[in-house]
Length: 215
Image (tube, rainbow, N blue to C red; front, side, top):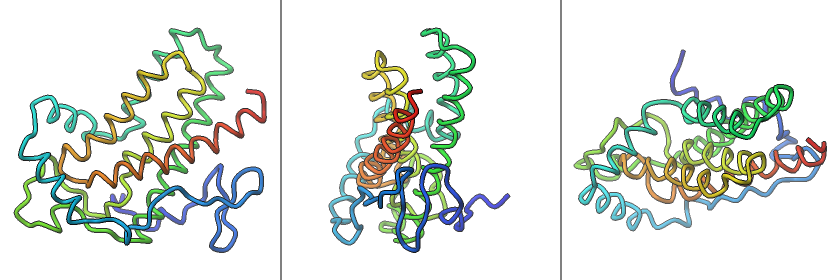
C-alpha cells in the first residue's frame, strides 16, 4: 500500500459532498472551510517556534511526541472510546451507531486534510532548515494542515457531543495530540492550530446531522 496516497484528497466522503469546486454539507449548504490560506502565514516566525521547541524540549514532551506519533490517531483513541462507552453504559445499538458515525467522520477528516495538503503543498520544518533534527521521522508529504490535528479536532467535537461529562479530558487529550506534532519537530505550530480548527468544523457538521436525527 502506498503510504503517501496523494489522490486521497479526492476520495468520496460520508458527510461532505462535492459540487464542482464547492463542498456541500448534509443539509445542502455550501461550506466555507475554517482554515487560513498559507500565503497569509509568517513561516519564518513559525520556524523559530519549531527551533525553540526542539531546543527546549522536555522529557514529557518527547514522550507525548512518541506516544501520538507511533500510530494512527483513531487507533489510539478507540480504547479510550470503548472505556467511556462502558463507563457511561452506552447500549450496544447506540454504540454501533456512534462508532459508525465516528469512523465515517475520521474518513472525511483524512480526506479533507489531504485535499488541503496537496492543494497548497506546504513544506515541512526540516525542508526550511536542513540542520533541523526532529524527534521523529518527518513524513514525506506536505505538512499543512496536520492530519493528526484535523482528526483530533473532529474527534473532540463528536466525543464531547456523546460524552459531555468528559469535555475537559477530551479537549486536553486532543490538544495534546495536535501539539505532539510540534514537539516531534515534524509540523509547524500553525499546521496544528489550523488543523484543529478545520477538524472541529467538520466534527460540528457531523454533530449537526446527528442532532437532526435525534440520535
